[in-house]
Length: 368
Image 1 (tube, rainbow, N blue to C red):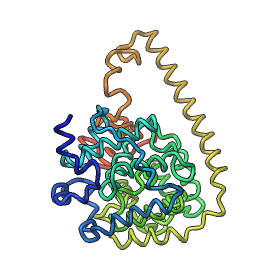
Image 2: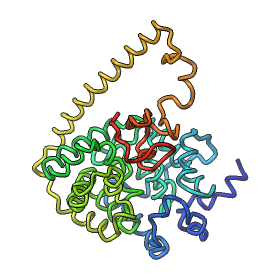
Image 3: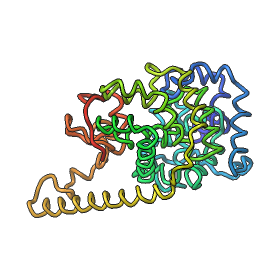
Image 4: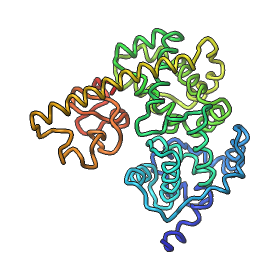
């Protein structure tokens, strides 16, 4: 409405950092916990730095002017919730909702990783440029097309490709993770889908983005391999699942900024030339297709049995057709990615990483 348009116009047409109260207002936002004073320290320099990112890819920043962002539109429930989870104030949530809804319309799908990647970019870029950049990343073969979908099958494919490469490059860590039932789809998500937002401190995250934009998806592979190499001894020294996940997501309580910086820099030295990644992708996709076909077959068989028995748990029951269908058994918002046998719940990786209710990250899970 006109009132909201006037109230939030400053955020609608400029980056959040240009607001004199942004850093104070959002000091407790989850995203800003990785800032450590970097945004304030760099200030105006970051606007030129991020604008130059368009020079790293075949994309003209000026074309962003043609993008239309509808500030008065209705937003999907998941977009509203993700904006609330990302920022503390309505002034910051408004532009994030606008960008997420515009991306969801364009991509014809949605994935929560879009929320925190968009939130990070909006700190130093205006909405149209964020949309322009992320649309390119989500559709260009050099980057991560298909990752930001509700069912992120292409991400799962590449997570499995990464695991195969790691099994060759670092077989000890690979075998250790398999033994601990820690699957690549769970720990690669924050690196690949989330582009290391909520993983790296901002000072290092800006470097990661520049390498990623210059090189494409293969830099994410090299980053993951560099991380495993750097933390190899610590990963092998523990059988505590929560501690392993904390190391893999570079939890600030476990891994300092200097180590994070070294991981990004040393990623540039990782050689992927021995690996035919396109062929490995095709092989992993074929295996995924077989698995998905089997899941579909089992679902159809269960549906048939439920219909025959008149079960109250039928897939066709009104109870199963509410807003929580197919969502995480804890937060009721995100798509479940793992099954926890201890809790008898299908849960998303975020709820698995963070202790929620009776669930704990030390519980053994199986990939869905």
